[in-house]
Every structure is written in structure tokens, then in C-alpha cells.
Amino acid sequence: MSETRKKVHLVVGARPNFMKISPLYREFRKFPEKFRIKLIHTGQHYDSRMSNFFFHDLRLPQPDEYLEVGSGTHGEQTARIMERYERVLQEDRPDLVIVAGDVNSTVACALDAVKMHIQVAHLEAGLRSFDRSMPEEINRILTDAVSDYLLTPSPDADQNLIREGISPEKIHFVGNIMIDALIEHKVKATQSEILSTYGLQQKKYALITLHRPANVDIETSLSKILNAFRAISRKIKLVFPIHPRTRKQLSLFHLDHAAAEIPDLLLLEPVGYFDFIKLQMEAKFILTDSGGIQEESTWFGIPCLTLRPNTERPITISEGTNQLIRLDTDAIIEAVETILQGNVKKGTIPRFWDGNTAARVVKIFR
Ligand code: UD1
Ligand code: UDP
Image (cartoon, protein in one colour):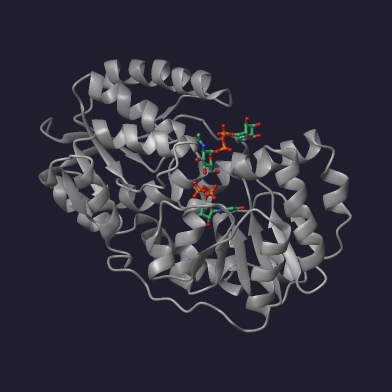
């Protein structure tokens, strides 16, 4: 194999990175004469249910480098990633580093690469919540500022970047890479047996995920949410695969028993990708604070209540099925009742959320 191949690092670290990088990994591998691909896993997420499960479901190979950074404060985690990834970069000297999304691994690896004069591409660039109290917003702004290629999922992202003074030739509207993964694995997900495992019936339950610090790291916030669940669960079964941060906070606030005692609230460990997609497809509605789930639910046309004051993904509201709700027990109950009465938001699928984003990305580098 010729040494003229472009050396590319694809970086993953946390759960939402795996489904963004896997379609790209496969697309790059179609051109072995042009690219030598390495998969780098920082280890920001490390529980098998937050990491290994996705390598299995998404058919990703073992990472070429596993940095084992684990959890910590923002400073500790970011620093640890930077130290360890810099050593990998010194050894390997890739031509291009591709980072995805807005987690600490994204910004840490982008900073390492740009300081070594290695080109950086940011997948899912340009999204803005305009809320700097969210760590992800800081990660987005910084990553975009140092990236050479800004690969955007929607036109609002292009506009945000232009407004920040980023030169238009760096910006490429490629579409939503998460939807590539969804389309690729939809059939497999349909075959998941998670509904029968837990005795669930189509459209007879709501799916919940929560992990934002503003919702789960503050005791009064988490209590308000649980009070809403207690009321809603009298009307519809709730299925809640719990993120490890949320599990930890429930126990810290001694709210775990209160949660376990809510009838018809099914608390699960985080589930694998196929099972989660199946749970989304068949849900009556979704209640979440996740970034990616706002997009997936829009693609499926399932009503989504997002428990946040803002979103960096406004297209899921203007075109999709998403709707923001305030962190208030009555507001949550009211929004759910509206859906249960049949008043659901209909949406359309945004442009370039079509399963061909990875191909558009790789074409840029070919
Ligand atoms: C991270 C991202 C967030 C993303 C989310 C996706 C940042 C700043 N945050 O949040 O943007 O939406 O991932 O899920 O990058 N833990 C485990 N096992 C694990 C991973 C985490 O037990 O495999 C626990 C640890 O107690 C840890 C806590 O969860 O301290 C939080 O993990 P961390 O990676 O810091 O942030 P997330 O809340 O997962
Ligand atoms: N997901 C999953 N299992 C779960 C919860 C989520 O497979 O138990 C998937 C979901 O389908 C989506 C991604 O994880 O593809 C979203 O990740 P997360 O909500 O952790 O992060 P965010 O998008 O908020 O950054």
C-alpha cells in the first residue's frame, strides 16, 4: 500500500460519538488506497453499556488507541485527554483529525491537533444553544474556532458560523450523520425484542432519558421531574433507561427509592443502540434532554418533549416534532396531557437527513 495515503484519525469518547463516527468509518474504509484510518477512543465513557455495546451494535472494530481517561471534573478530564492524545499524535502524525459533536473529548482532541498543525474537521459544527452555562456550548464554540473543516447538519448551523466570522469556504453543509446510522441500522433495530422482554406494547408507553446537569445535578430539579413522572405514570407507562450520571445523582439525593416506588415507571440500565431505537420507534412520545434524541425522534416523526429552556437544534422544532418544556412539574404534566389527548406536533424530515452524510463528508476529503 502506498505511503501517499492520507492518515485520518476518527475520535470517539462518549456515547453520542459512536453513532456519528461509525458511518464515517465505514465510508472511509471504502477507499483503502486513499486513506489510512485509525479509530481513537478517549475512554470518556467506559461502562460496557455506555461504550462496548455500541462497538458491537454499530459493528465498529476495537479502537486502534484506547486512552482510558475515565471520569473527572471538566478540567481533569479535558487535561487527561489532551495529555494522552498528544502523545498519540506525536507518534502517529496523522494528516487529519475528525472530531464529532460537543463532548469534552471533542474539544480536547481538536485543541491537541490544531496546536500540532494537524488539520481538524468538526462533524456537527455550528450548532448553538446560545447558553454558555452548558459545557457543551463552550465545547462547540471552541472546537469550531480551531477547526479547518466545519461540517454542518443544518442551514442554521452555517448561519451561526458565518455570524461568528468563520470564512465560508471552511463550511460544508453535509447533513446529519446520526441519521446515517439510524437508516443503516433501522431494520436490525426493528428485530430487537426489548418490547416483549419488558412486556411493553406499541404506543402504550413513553420513553424517557435525562442526563443534563441542569436537570439531574440539582436536587429540587430532579424532585420536580420525579413528581411529574408520578402523575404521568397514572396515565401511561414510562420507560426510563437511566444514564450513569442520573443514577449517581438519584442515589446522592436519596431519591432512588422514591423513583423505584413510582408505579408504572420502568427503570432500566442504559440500553444498546438497537434496543433504544426500537424503544423510540414504538413510543407514544419521548421526553428527554438529550441532543441526539431530539433529532432521531424528528426523523421518526415521534413527538418529543425536550426538558430544556433552549436547544442547539432549532430545526427539530421549526421542521420536526420537537417541543421545549420548562422544568416545572405542572408544565411537564400539561404537555404530556396534550399529547395523550391526540394533539401531537406533526413534522417533516430536514434536508440532507437522508443517510448520505458520510458519503458527502468523505467526498470532501477525496
Ligand atoms: C457527557 C457529555 C454530554 C453528553 C453525554 C452523553 C461532556 C461535558 N458531557 O455527559 O455532552 O450529552 O456525555 O451521554 O462531555 N459515568 C459512569 N460510567 C461511564 C461514564 C460516566 O459511571 O461510562 C458517570 C461518572 O460518575 C461520571 C458521570 O457519569 O462522573 C458523568 O460523565 P461525563 O462523561 O463527565 O459526563 P456525562 O454526563 O456523561
Ligand atoms: N441511546 C442509546 N441507549 C440509551 C440512550 C441513548 O443507544 O439508553 C442513543 C440514542 O439513540 C442516540 C444517542 O444514544 O443515538 C444519544 O446519546 P446521549 O443522549 O447520551 O447524548 P447527547 O446526544 O445528549 O449528547
